[in-house]
Image (cartoon, rainbow, N blue to C red; front, top):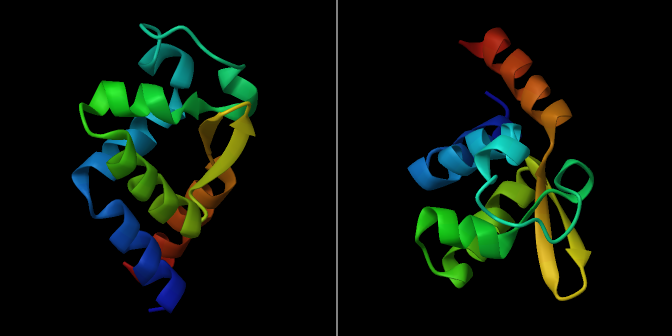
Length: 103
């Protein structure tokens, strides 16, 4: 099994990171209770809103998101002083195809 596949699966092995990936699939719906700072379809969801929704510290969410970013599952965009994260659906599709080849 390729090392990058193993690392990606490790990134998704944390229940909170997996939940965040699910929320980022439909950011408008999943974060409708928060006023967007920028266009969610274009740049994603603010780390502040991710922290609020999970109930975890912003520093913890930033660490989690860095792990997902290293796995190329999300991309980060700075908007002013806020970092926004958007799901990389192309990478998610590639991951699913890789899993089909190995499972």
